Image (cartoon, rainbow, N blue to C red; front, side, top):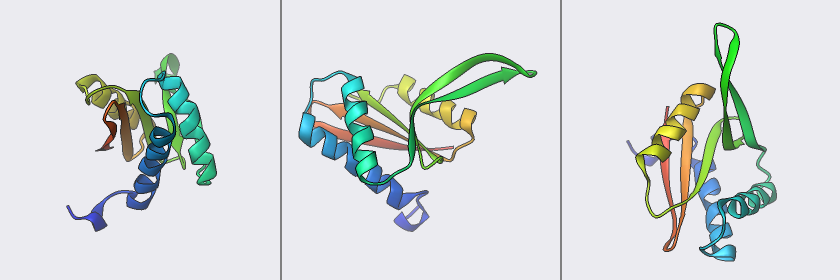
Length: 125
């Protein structure tokens, strides 16, 4: 797959750039919530439409059995999860893949805030 084939390539570039802006300002060592608030501020500056703590209902035969809360749903098409962690853990990947399935969205991005900087992983549904 070359760069032309990437789903939402330009948006992904900008979304990761917002994470770098947050990291450059706050550095490492804060609660995840603080990074989420700063990330929301960066998304607003870039004129992205987004919803924080986007709720996704899970139903069984018309009855609610639970719900998920996504960190961010950007442009109503990209799921973004911010994590303060040293590495991508299987639970992070499973979480985002579950969100993609529940929302029927095509792209999820896990953004890690690590002691060494930003790392990210794109996940496709």
